[in-house]
Amino acid sequence: MSALRNMLLLAAASGILVAIAMTILQFFATVPLILQAETYETATPAVAAEADHHHHDHAAAAVEEHHHGGDEWQPADGFQRMGLTAVANVVTAIGFGLLLVAASEFAGGIRSWREGFLWGLAGFAVFTLAPGLGLPPELPGMPAAELTPRQIWWVGTVAATAGGLALIVWGRGPGLAFLGLAVLVVPHLIGAPQPASHESLVPEDLHHRFVVAVTVTNLVFWPLLGYAVAVLRPRFAAELGAPQPRLA
Amino acid sequence: MATTSSTSASASSSSLVMPRLIAAALGAFIVGMVGFSHMTVAHNAGHDFRHSMAFPCH
Image 1: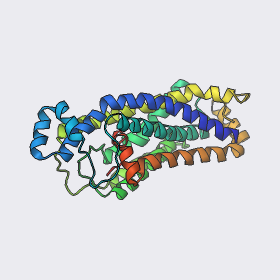
Image 2: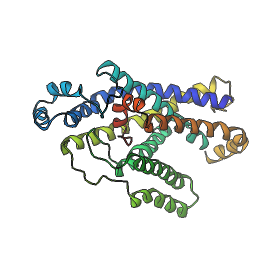
Image 3: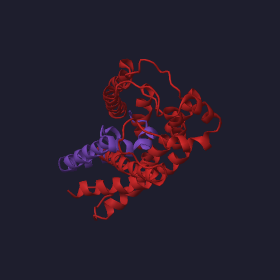
Image 4: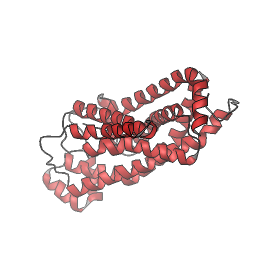
C-alpha cells in the first residue's frame, strides 16, 4: 500500500500549499462580496439601501446578524469565521488533490510542470466551468432551486465533463472524441434546476462581480494544484527508492 | 511517451489499480463531505468557503 500512502502524502502536501494561496485570494476577492451580500440578506430594505452607499462601514454591523434562521451554531465573525474558511480550503484542496493525483496516475503520472498545468486546467473545466454554466456561483440571499436536485445536477455535470474530456483526450479516433463532446453538452441540454424567480435584493452588479471573482480564483487554484502535484511528485516517488519517478 | 506509459501500465496495472481507486474514492468523499454536507454546523462553518467555490448552497 506504499503507492496509496505516497498518493495521500502527495495530495496532502500539494493541497495544503495551494489552499494557503487560495485562502488569501478568497479573503481579497470573494469573501468581501459575500459579506456585502449578507447586508441585503439580513437588513431591512432601508438599511440595505444605505449599505449600498457605504459598503464597508455598514457591512460589518449588518453581518453580525447573519443567520439562516433559528439559533443554530455559526462561527463568530472575524478570526473564527476566517479560520474555518481556511480549514475548509485545506481539507477540500486535499480532496481535489487526491482526485487529481488518482486520475493522473491512471494516465501514467504527471511528468512535467506543463502537464501539471494542463491537468489543473482540466480540473477547472470539470469542477468550476461546467457546473458554473448552469449553476453560477451564488451569493447569500439569492433565490435558488431545491438543494438536493441542484447537488445531483452538479455531481452529474462534474462526472459527465470529466468523462467527456477523457474520451476526447484518450479516445481512439474522432468518433469517440465526438462522443466525448456530446457527453460534455448533455448536462446543459438537461439544464440545471432553477428557482421560480431570480428576483433578489442582491444587486446584479454585485452578483456579476462575484461570479467573476469565484471563476478567476478557481482558475488560479486549479493550475496551481496541478503544478504543485507535478513538482512534488518526484520527491514522494524518490523517497521510496523507486527506480523510476513513479509512485509505485 | 505513449510506449513508455503503456509499458509501465501493463507492468503495474494490477497492483496499482486498487490504490488509485481508493485515493479517488477518498478524494470524492472528502470533497462531498465539505461541499455537500446538509449538517447545519458543518454548513455554517464552511459557509464562505462553499460560496467561494460555487458549491450548491442553502
